Length: 316
Image (cartoon, rainbow, N blue to C red; front, side, top):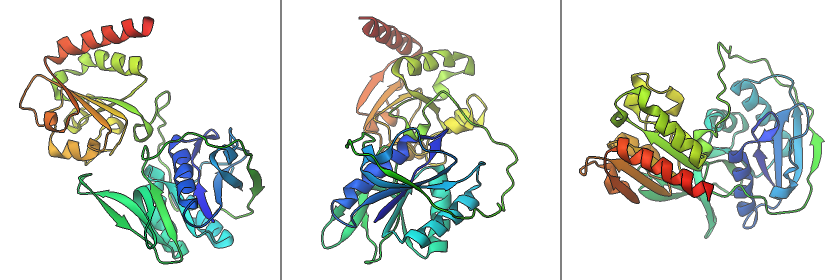
């Protein structure tokens, strides 16, 4: 059995968790049978996970926002009770935080950041290494283990018309050892790790007051905004938008880099994007070497023209 932890916001499953379910379905075709899901909350999720190939959904009653230590503890108890061969979750900020804790508590092995699965002599999970320049393959012994799935590495589309059975697991959630000082929730935008289109800008913008054209482009494309580290460090943009080796590593379908030179630390966090579009007036900018498409020109001329062209195309 493959058990998948589903994260949700107000009982709407996160896209990255739905991708983890589809990843589990791919695994189930070559090893370990049925896919089941588990989540924490007070009521049923907004969609029946049966449409994602899930046979049964386990619910753990939780009336408050649990800390990561509480989630790790109760999921470890669930693993002990259900004995899945594989336990899977998204390689999200929460997933990365709790996966190691669950591995230690449950005594299972851990492969973090999987982007694919194959079966040769045995099941192996594919990961990117050397900043996305190569793949490496890792496997467990016959007892299976825990796998975190990188967002946007597989489709989140439903593939079934079946309905899953819901049941409650009666497990006790322990007291948290973590005290939450402040919680900030960014609403209205797709989280960077789950975004399919990202519009990012850097110091070439010259001043934070010029960011209106970037926000407009993102709105026109239904994209999420991001930035380079220097921009976040000087306070032009919030730190949760910082992408790169020292920020958030992303792999959208389209990454648009505007006024970013393309330092190796930035490239390490975005070079798994399927399509990279670079807009920069410096023809020697390193980013052009990694780009699928490039526009060498002044962003203050190019971006407004691009916005106008998209508006016209959408009005047709």
